[in-house]
Image 1 (cartoon, rainbow, N blue to C red):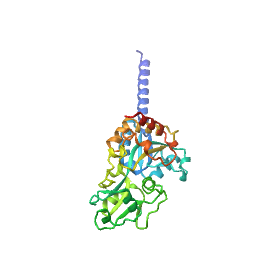
Image 2: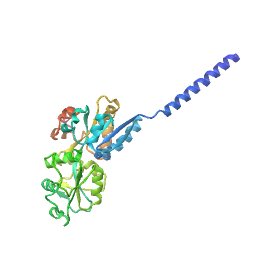
Image 3: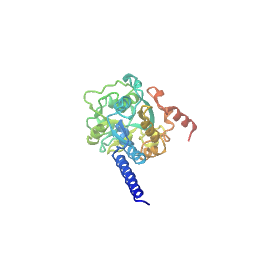
Image 4: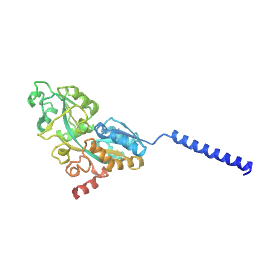
Length: 310
């Protein structure tokens, strides 16, 4: 080989090596894909933290999580402030959320849980007693078989917050119910649960999926505990769906939704102690959907699967 050919070959080796190194460097410099999830603290604590970590490991797509409640989750998904919104209630027409262009997908089943401090001796409460406690007609734990101490009702400030909206319509039958002046009102489920965990006289309603992650006592309702089995078969009365809100044109959001309601996502939901779509198959037809089910993209599919049976 002539000296000119050797020089040319060497130059080409240097060129391709340099190009490969540049490409590798550019690849390393390019930030990984990111999805933003905002919303329901119940779902975040219950399984979204684990799901986000698993999804990034499997796909390389990072899912950044922040709380803020159901209303924020829906609004953020609609406005573009987030790719995905976590919510434990449907879109509300009175807030014009039905006009945001988002769709909902049911991803799991939760239940409203009545929580107290672990040292509280009360184990069970009736539905009527619970209504009267929230209405602050029953104000002493002694009435419920507990100590002679004042009951401290803890709730959220916003009537449209996911848990408190569900509590108002499912337990109190009044979406506009207003708590009395002695109730302690906080911003979201996390602070509510934390306060009850540290206050022996407190009582609150939250999602069981997040409550079971903290040091709290969950009361039975009419003798029925909100276990996964009792929620799945409808024995426990206050079951409800957990949703993701997203815009259908957002391809990244769609792929995550498909993953979460698929086998791998549902395995993680189950491992975290939340009722999966398969386990709660019979609930979709018995749950009283309080807004337009036309926004729930997997509603018809879930009904069909429930009709097919196990």
